[in-house]
Image (tube, rainbow, N blue to C red; front, side, top):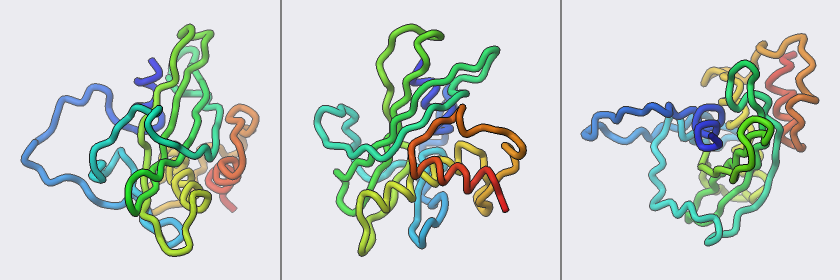
Length: 183
């Protein structure tokens, strides 16, 4: 169930993928430009940086944030859970954002957190894990909130008190406020 929630609510990859045209060129387009740097999202760009060893015991990831997502699995009732965010620096010239999803035990029982790549961004002069993590988290939240590629805010949460329900760490919460409370 955590795997399905990760694919649907965070990565936006259809779980019923039926395959595509194998002769088609890989998708390489950046999702957005944030702070003058391209950021790619797994939902609209093929991960083409190399082989991805998903065994998390073999690399050091850097925690950058976490949030409580109240709607990882939409239903009656919707099932929420925690999402942990970590930056991976293994790929020369790139930062990757991993998300680890674990749905609430009351709904699915005890389970293991499911991890997957959400977005990536190139390393640029003067960059560090914190700066890259901010770009990556902002892009992830824009995608979670369904904000169009040429837009930066949404009215989806207008008039709602959503902060307590989403319970995110800073700076993730500041990006959420920026996106969800347009001026």
